[in-house]
Amino acid sequence: MVRAMLIARTLIQLREACARLRQDAGALAFVPTMGALHQGHRALVRAGVASGAATVASIFVNPLQFGPNEDLSRYPRDEAGDLAALEAEGCTLVWLPDVATMYPPDEATTIVVGGPAERWEGDARPGHFRGVATVCAKLFGQVRPDRAYFGEKDWQQLQVVRRMVADLLLPLEIVGIETVREADGLAMSSRNRFLSPAERTLAPSLYAALTRAAGRIAAGAPTPAVLSEAADALTGAGFDVNYLALVDGPSLAPLDRATPQSRLLTAARLGSVRLLDNVPVG
Image 1: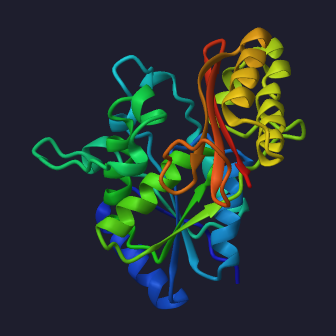
Image 2: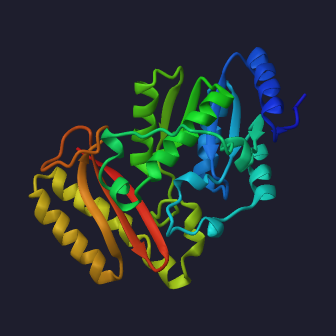
Image 3: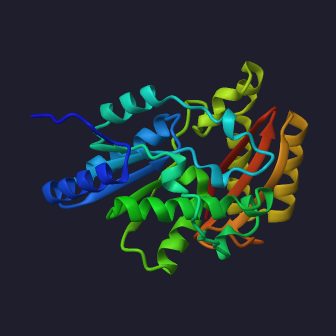
């Protein structure tokens, strides 16, 4: 018999449901999200389900990871559509906390991560990774999963969460899932819906530039020259390039040449939308 997907909106409901699911399935897989789900999120849920664990997803638009000049209210929300998508993928339980549950008014603790949280998005969005690390730590403590799944599209975020889990000795595994792309190569993101038709036509050029540059660097072309030419080409096409860098995958430290773990990392604004992407180089 197929069970209906469970929904928890209070900590008591969540804890009772997680205890039952752990008893029945033996393990919990967890997919934290901010909603506005797309095929990338669904791939994370499918990976959790395929592991054989009872799969829990959360939907919480986290105010702590939005800066003062970032429009929290503009972030897309579609609870009914998200719940339908999660149920279709075999999700067992959805956790829907409110802000008061996640951030009680008398709390006094946040988590600051160094290392992979420095540079790149850490410079572009001060405080962002403090918000990411804090909300993930809270969610891990609430759900207590055996594994949590994150997309590689937000590569720096993935490494920040891995570092936090390792440093705080949290008893779970962080699993990265390959970036899910549109047919034309654009990395799927909840913010893509804000691209105008003309911008949407241009947006795949970011991934194309990344893959060309990665191929040239892997073939031995000088990294600084390749990155400069790629950034100039993107700027000429209409992108506002925030950064384009070759980095060590786990640490996010900049590199002069490719290594077996290196990634090519970029953020570029197109109109009102800030696009992030990365590809392996090696």
